[in-house]
Amino acid sequence: MEVVARAKVNLALGVVGRRPDGYHDLVSVFARLDLADRLTVGPPGDGDRLVVAGGPIDYRPAADDLVLRAVELLRRACLPHAPGLTVRLEKYVPLAAGLGGGSADAAAALDLAARAWGFQLTGDVRLALAAQLGSDVPFLAADIEAALVTGRGESVAPLPGPLDPVGILLVTAGAGLATRDVFDAWAAAPPRRAATGGSGSVGADRARDLAARLGAGCTAADLVAAAPDLRDANDLWSASIRLRPDLVELRDVLERRLGRAILLSGSGPTLLALYPSRAAAETAATSLTADPVLGLAVAAIRAATFGRTTREAP
Ligand code: C5P
Image (cartoon, rainbow, N blue to C red; front, side, top):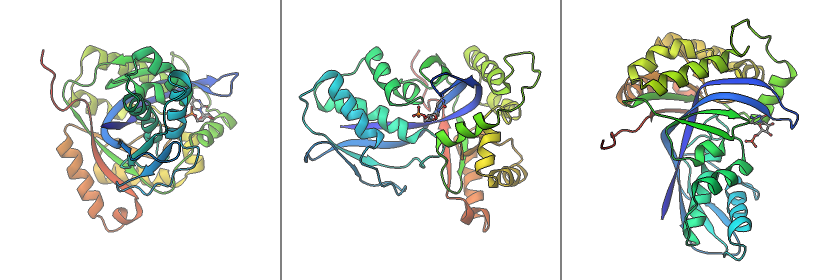
């Protein structure tokens, strides 16, 4: 029994204000990737256990890892006497990178535990539990390619993915960024609102435009053409670069080298570029990895795909 925990990127992310509960209201287009961690059930031990069992990412989970919290949450909600579960995790998604890796693992752990205990989680229960685990988890718990996500993350309006798969180059450099720190930095100095004629948040306006394009059925080429508009469509950029000033230079270098708009995913620090195909993103990844300066300085350079690679039968 294996559950695949696919990561995400944000193609636009608006922060529309701080809420009384300390979270922030967002308007964001989330896109699901094929880059994924893998979870399986391991041999039983005492209580619940999380064992990292492979993958290129060095991960040492804490005792309160979100995967274990997901297993315990499901037990308390659905099956209080369920036996202890060992979760084996193969880690491929960089940590604290703005790719939702930990949240995707938690979403997958809900399904894995349910299956191991002999039942299947259905939509509403899965979403309610997901929302308790974190703001990104509801989108990642839904089996969809894209969504316009609002509220603190719990409100997920599914969107069709692109008509053909989009290649995505992911560049994750240096230490990770804690989402909380980036939102705190945003709240400490909220950007002055531009007179956009929309919500006052550039990210939110661009997210809504992009959602409309996806809704109307756009191709990979359409998305690549829209990338320059998405470059500044992440309202967390200014906060992220306060914590990681090196991202400014890295973005400049990548834009010069690749001749493409570079976007920030989530709260960072992963930077990304859009390509008309997976193969084109792979070629770009190979050229960056071979670069004697960049290839060494950057921890993870990956090619991924947004959008299903095989069309469903009509
Ligand atoms: O929901 P999650 O636990 O993943 O969020 C981590 C932190 O990110 C929160 O504690 C909060 O500080 C910040 N956050 C936020 N607004 C959101 C999502 C996350 O302020 N919509």
